[in-house]
Image (cartoon, rainbow, N blue to C red; front, side, top):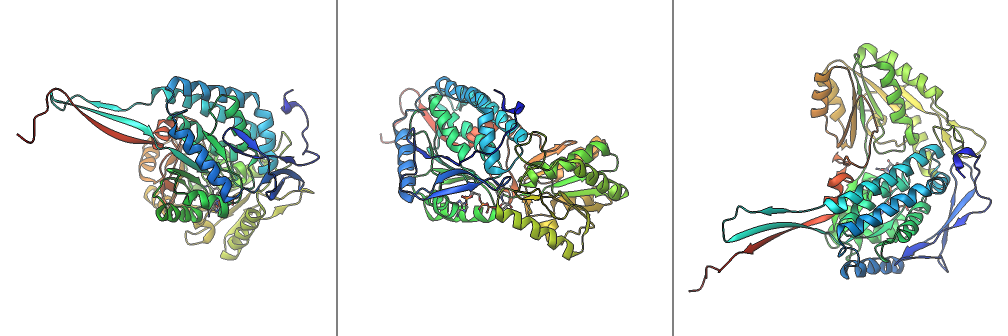
Length: 500
Ligand code: NDP
């Protein structure tokens, strides 16, 4: 039965998940168990094992064995594509179930979770084509005696550390692409949102992925995450999370085996609105850009940079839009803004709201926690009269808090947009094609939106400029990122001898 047509409630007792190594889900046994409480309901919903360093070694060794014996990398692209396609189909079949556990652990609205998970099926389906089309290059211009070939090979054992804001989506923006070229994986989900990563392991197995190719080790960041970053037998690591932890990952990689890194870190993303934009559309887009996933989104448009002539009116239009957005029980179909995922994040956002007021910014709307009887919620908040030196304008808040700063010229808007250590994403709203292109070219960001925001899909790559990260995920770029290149020179005919 389609769950969207019935009223959902949290489970009566928490569901126990295991960790996943070498094709089998393993129960916690005598390991400590982490109980996850639903941020929207304050009731325990899942139990996740706290794995040990020995469990991590076991998972890495299973992945290494699977990689070395070529049970996956040795298959042809068509066979790998078939597994990825079956995975996509199984995800589609189980959207409701995956979305339910995603919502319970993360606090995001169920309708949003369902849309994200459907998008994940699409990632697998798209990457299946890339498994077949990935290829190298040939050099036929090296003279009659020599032929050159460039091949792409999988890097080997890939670690993936994911955060709690989009547990399944961020995982699926990586896994199908990493698998497409024949790599093996050890994934470490956030301790707060591990359930759906274990569910993906079950699905991949059912879809025919050979044992040992995808493993999940559950546990905390400073233990399992750090050990994965330090592990000498992991060839590459994809990390998504804070810039602070990203620095620790870079240090750990440098101090161990110089593993290749992919990093998707923080953002403080500008939304540039010109007076000639369709202001109705722009207000809706800017409200969506800051409130989607309650602003707990690395690409959220948290800095509104708006042409002075319309600044006050436009800030009010955004506030009016946000006032109509429905904040509520994440399991309710009508909910648009759910709960704040972690206790720590809740405290961080509320502290930033206090800081904004203390810094002298003007509160246009929101500015407080919402009491819905249970769970933790924060009203979408807009601050105007924000100057570039304020902490709320410079630091990633990772919550539904928008800052508004006016500009007078195109150059000033571009300079303000670039006045940040980050460079993850940016949007521009204008009906003037010249301005749109000028801004798109000159603002430093890995993802750019013109008259829209937060658009995405499996084809276009994601990743950041500046301190927002290294490398790209998704698209053909995301597959190539997890390959290494080999140059092959092939001599044709008799060698011209060096020793006579
Ligand atoms: P972290 O960077 O600590 O967490 C992200 C992931 O890294 C989680 O899986 C976490 O595990 C893991 N991790 C934590 N410490 C280490 C470590 N030493 N070595 C390896 N892995 C580690 O983010 P927080 O949860 O602390 O959030 C803090 C801030 O980070 C937020 O306020 C937000 O600004 C930003 N953030 C950005 C995200 C993005 O999408 N770019 C996502 C999440 C946060 P565990 O959760 O089990 O500790």
